[in-house]
Structure formats: structure tokens, C-alpha cells
Image (cartoon, rainbow, N blue to C red):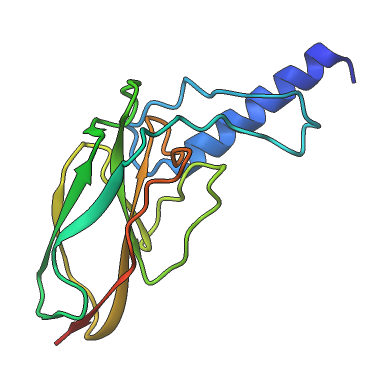
Length: 163
């Protein structure tokens, strides 16, 4: 395969991955950033830079809280600006809520499913209904393409109990 064919294959693979990672049709996946020339089976995506001191955190609930449904969750961010998915600007991104799961691959768009909730509309709060019992929550900030920043902007994991 010639170099130009490899580049096209890489771009198409990245575009397919980005579209699959976005759960809502209003997501803009047209700006895939490809770095390096790699075999078509290995796609490397560029990660947006985060400023020094950037952080995300839970305003509510607090770690160890006992809560009831519907659960109100509020997110905070420092040293960065909240922006809608698809809006490319430096030092900006949007929240992703990780529920009862570990950190996804930091070099790829964050999956969109019941354990990886996207807030590409730039919202900073939500209401959830969770099964009774203990749950873990973590925030992960990501850029316009749902790719975590470098260095990663991630909260501490908190544990809550739903009554």
C-alpha cells in the first residue's frame, strides 16, 4: 500500500472510531486530528493540551454521601473553559461522567454508553437515577472530539451510596 493510501486508510479508520464514540447526531466528528504515519490498524489521535493547574471536581455529591434518586450531580472545572462538543478552542472542553468504571483509553475518544455519560452540550449538572447500592463516580474532561487532554484532566473517584 502506498503512503497516500495508508494516510487515507488511517483517516477513514479514525473517522469511523470518532463517529462510533459519539452517541448523539449533533456531535461534530469532522475534525479528526491524525499524527504520525502508522499502519492502518494503529490509529494515533492528537490530544489537546491542558493548562497547568487545570482540574475537574464534584460540587455535589460529596465522597461517601448517601443519596436518593433522582441524584443531582454538579461538576466544577478550574483553569479551563466549558465548551460544546465540536467547538475547538484552546484550554476548553466538556465533562464526561464515568459511572462504576475505570478510566478509558486516553488516546481515543471517550466511549458513549451507560457508564460513560457525555455532556457535549456544555452542561455542568445532571440528574441521574441509579440502582440502590454503592457506586463510584469520576469526571473526565475532554476536548471538542471527546479525547482527553494532555495532561489528563480527571477528578478523584468518589463513592456514593444510593438508598
